[in-house]
Length: 330
View 1 (cartoon, rainbow, N blue to C red):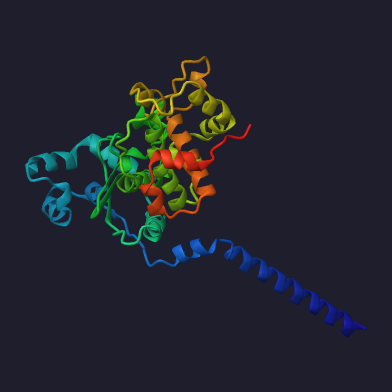
View 2 (view 1 turned 120 degrees about the vertical axis):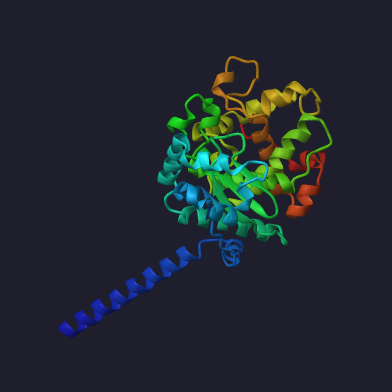
C-alpha cells in the first residue's frame, strides 16, 4: 500500500510537471507566427552614446572626439566653441541629468532593435542606420533626426514630462517628453518617409495621411500602447474612444470630409492642447482628433480588405474611405 501511495504521488508529480511545461511552451509560443518570424530577424542595434562621451570628455579630448564623431562637429564652428561647451556649467548639468535617466543602454538598444526588425519585415530592403544619441539644448521641436544612414536621438528631450528643464514648455508638448516616447517618435520619423504627402487638399486626404502613418506604427510597435503611438495620455485616448460616434457625426454633418478649408488643419490635425470643435466641450478633447479619426478609418479598411502594406500606401484617401466600411459603434 505504501508503495502504491508513492507511485500515485510520483504519477501526479509527473503529470503536474508535464502540464506546467506545456503551459510554459504555450506561453512562449503565444506570439503569432508573424511575430516569431520578426523576432528571428538578425538585427541587433548598439546605440552609440555621443552624449555620454561628450559628458566625460576634458578639453584635451576634443581632437579624439572630433575624430570619432565628425558628424557632430561642423567645420564652420571653431574649436573654441566646443572647448567652451565642454566646460559650460549648463551643459554639464544637462549631461548629468541625461546620464541619470539613461544610465543603462539595454532598454534603448532592444526597443530600437525590435522596431527595426518590424520595419525590415514589412519593408524588405530597409537599411538599418547607425544610431547615435546626443543632446540638443532641449530643442523639443527636433527630438529625432532620421535618414538612410543615421538615426540621431536627442536624449535631453526625453527626461520625463515633469522635468525641471521643461518648465515653461506648454503642457501638451511636455507630456510627451519622456523615455517611453522615444521608440514612438523614431517610428514616426520613418513612417513619414514611407507615406507620400497627399496632393489632394481635402480634409479627408490629410487625416488619411496621418492614419496611414499611425497604422504603420500598429504594425511596427505591437507592444506599445495606442496612446503612446499618437502621443495621447490614456485619458485623452479614452475621451476619443468614448466620443467616436459624436466626433464622426460632427464632421459628416458639417460636410468637412471633402472640404479644402485650411483652417481645419489647425483646428483638428496639428498638435495642440485640444481640438477646436467650437463647442463647450472643446477643452475636454485632446488635440489632433483628425489624426486619430484617420487612424480609425485606415484600421477599418484593413479589417475589411485584404491588402499588403505597399498596396495600402499607394491607395488614395477616397479609395480607402469608400471601402473602409467605417461606422463608429454607438
